[in-house]
Structure formats: structure tokens, C-alpha cells
Amino acid sequence: MDVNSAVWTVPARAREFGFFVDGQWAEAGDRPMSERKSPAHGVAVTRTVRCTKADIDHAVRVARTAFEDRRWSGLPGGERASVLLKAAAGIRARVEELALLESLESGKPIGQAIGEIEGGANIFEYAAGAARALHGDAFNNLGDNMLGLVTREPIGVVGLITPWNFPFFILSERVPFILAAGCTIVSKPSEVTSATTLLLAEILSDAGLPAGVFNVVTGSGSEIGQALAEHADVDMISFTGSTAVGRSVLLASAGNFKKVGLELGGKNPQVVFADANLDEAADGVVFGICFNAGQCCVGGSRLVVEKSIAAEFEALVAAKMARVRIGDPLDPNTQMGAIVTAAQNATILGYIEAGKREGARLVCGGEAYPSDAGQFVRPTVFADVTREMSIASEEIFGPVLTISTFETFDEAMAIANDTIYGLAASIWTCNLDKATDAFRRIRAGRVWVNTTINNGPELPLGGFKQSGTGREAGIYGVEEYTEVKATHIALGRREPWVS
Ligand code: NDP
Image (tube, rainbow, N blue to C red; front, top):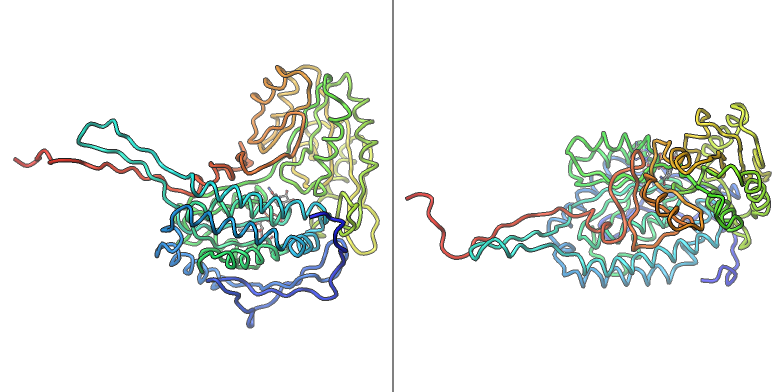
């Protein structure tokens, strides 16, 4: 959809949602409601239900029944694929509605929201193929009296906890793969961005997904997110969010040793060598930190640049930063929208103050962007950053870039890997040997060469080190949600053990 083909306005009234369990909308009843204000406009845009632990118990029971009676897992992959393709068409048919809600709840530019919704549909289309491609293995070399089979089976009921930075896109990087594998789902979106997850439940239902296979329970992370992670009848948790909560999800899951997939934080390096195309590299670096106002787990927040060109490159980056269009997310020309919550805004501004206090040199930005109704931060660059500074090592999750320099290739690799995280990295050089050596040595789950933040459902996502465990997307993303079973089939007459 062309962003200019519609007029985007803040709705006059907040849209109210129930929650979605067993194939139908559930009413709020006497449960409290949570009101979401647009972080860019300061007006209420959605109201969602604050569900209870009892609602989680009910949704898990429903998902368990739907799994055990094989209404979904028992279907041929081709039939599952057909539902996923219809869901993709359903998403495409509702792009305008989904994108507007996504932009209003998260504060992201409307053009970007459209891209994410359409990107989500594209992932559903890919995963439809994966539903048919999923297969096991056979050992036909065990002699004439034995056949060995390795089959993949859906892992069962999956609890899916997703964050607010890319609510629909991150959901789409998981849901179609989990469904392709034949699992059932209880989904808990972030309380501040629940609308598009709820609408996906309706779209899936309209596409023919059997009742009870995809359920959405809304409410607070610390209460019902925690209850889902602890639940004894959930077989796997897929969590995306902060490293701190990821750790607590891992601990909570120990009760029944459920499998846990975690996609957590990052402090991702952008390594720029002197032989790079500097103008293109600067553009990539600015995009990498300003995209989604820096609230991006794979955003390149650490510029590691070769000393011989550092001054020239810093000036290029600062000049491009000054031209980034900040403002109303509903203006199609906006490139950088609002910060999602007042708390996140305070965290980012707190890190900016820490950078100044700790002696880093402020190159540009360094303050809030003025607005009557919302919260915005100017793209900020700190140079002369040393490893002891908090801005060098902690995930800020805002448009704040740090610069450090290197003189040798080994030094560049040491700085790039000097982090507890290992989510992503970008390398900028025109030398293929150097790029290859660098991508092999950087310890991260995703690496980009002469580009940044590219994605697509074919390639897997996930982190090294404290950025998480497991992989989403690609054929790996379906296999992630399966158990592997080994079966020996004896053929012919049995050689008696008892004589
Ligand atoms: P959280 O990790 O708190 O939130 C992520 C998800 O987890 C949300 O759905 C949240 O629900 C839920 N959640 C919160 N507490 C629990 C819990 N105890 N058990 C289970 N689920 C829970 O991130 P924040 O929103 O607090 O953001 C803080 C920082 O996390 C950011 O500054 C950033 O560094 C990082 N982050 C990383 C993301 C990534 O993509 N890797 C995404 C988002 C944040 P609810 O929102 O309703 O509380």
C-alpha cells in the first residue's frame, strides 16, 4: 500500500477490544480496562482488557484441548498451508486498519508501520511453504529387519510473549512458524501495543484456523506474562524482550522444564573500515540507529570506526542525522516517530545525561525534541566513548549512537565482540577478504555486510551470548517448535530372547 493513498488521522474515540479465546471474542466483564494513549499525540487510541491469571489458565486449557484432539496438528501440511495463505491475504486486506493501530499505539511512522504489516503477510506466505516442507529422516541402512524413522512432531502448547517495538512484525516472525509446526498458542502481547495481535486472532479465525489454536490474552507482563511462563501445562515459551525479563522467564519455566526460546537485547556494532564507501556507510549507520527511534533490538548502536577516517566519518554521520525528519508518525514524510512510553523516554534521556557526565564528547542531539503532546528524542551521537562508560556497554534502546575508534583489524574485532550481547553486527568495507574474515570472527546471530537491518523469512533470527537462545524464521523457525522422535520398526520374525 502506498502511504500517500490514504489520509491518516487520530480517531475521535479510542477503539475498545475484548480478548480472544477459543475462536471468539471474550467480553471484558468486570475486569479492569487498560487505556493506551498515542505516545505521539497524547490521546487515548485503544482500550484493552486487563486479564487475570484465571484467564491465562482458561486459555491454556483451551489451547491444550485443541492440541490434544489434533484438530490442527492432525491436518496435512497442505491444509495448514492453505490457512496460512488465507491469513496472509486477510492481513493484506486490512493493512490500512492494522498499520494505523500499530502507528498509534507504538508511535512509529505510518509508512514504516505499513511496511511491517505487509512484511508480516510475506512471512505468513513463506511459512505456508514451510508447513509442507517440514519432514523427518529415515534410516534404511539398519539391515533388512529394521527401519529407523526420525519424525518431527509439534512441541505442543506454546506461550508467546512479544514486545512493543515491532508488535505485529515480531509476532509474524513467530506465529506462522509455530502454526506450520502444528502447535497451538496462547499469545500475550505487550500491554501497550496489543491491538494488532488481537486483530490477527480474528484474521486467523476468518482464514479457517480451528477454534482454540490461537488465543490472545491481554494484560500486564509482570502478572499474566509471568503466569504464562510459570504455567505447568505450557510446553514451550517464546519470549522477546529485555535480557532481565528473559532471565526471569527462564527461571519461571523451570517448574516443568518447558523449552524456552529467547530473543533479548543487543549492543550491536557497526564496524566501518577506511576502505568502505563512506557515504553509503554513513547512511547505513544513521538508518541503523534512527530506525524505530532506536527502539530496535538489532539496531546498530556502537559505531566502531577506523581512526584514519574517524573525523571525516563523524562529520558525515552528524550531517545526515541533522536531516532525519522527526515528528508526527501520521505524517507520511516522517522518518522517526515518538518514544513508546514515558518510562522508556526517561531511560533514554537518563543515558544521554550519563554520557555527558561520564565524559563522552557530544557530537549532536543530546536532548528531547520539543513537542506539545508527545515524547521524542533527537538523534544523538557521542564520540570518544570508552569501554567503562555505561553508554558503551548497556542497551539504551533509543536513538543514541556511541563512537569508538580502532587502528588494526584485530582491535576492531576485539571492540566489536566486547559485549555481553551477540545479537547483530554490520561490517562496512569494499574488501571481500576483510568482510569475510570479520563476519566469521564476530560473535553474533545476524551479520550484515555493507548493509544493515535487512531481513526476510528465509534466514534465521536469534542471538549468541546473552542475546538469547533458539532461532526464529526460516526452516529453523519451524523446527524450533518441534520435538524430534526416533522410532525403530522391527520387520519379519523376532529372534526370541526367552528360549
Ligand atoms: P520487557 O522485557 O519488560 O517486555 C517484553 C515483554 O515481556 C512484554 O510483553 C511485557 O509485557 C512482558 N513481560 C514483562 N514482565 C514480564 C514477566 N515478569 N514475565 C513474563 N513477561 C513479562 O521490556 P520493557 O518493555 O520493560 O523494555 C525494557 C527494555 O527491554 C528496553 O529498554 C530494551 O532494552 C529491552 N527490549 C528489548 C526488546 C527486543 O526486541 N529484544 C523489545 C522490548 C524491549 P508488558 O509490556 O505488558 O509489561
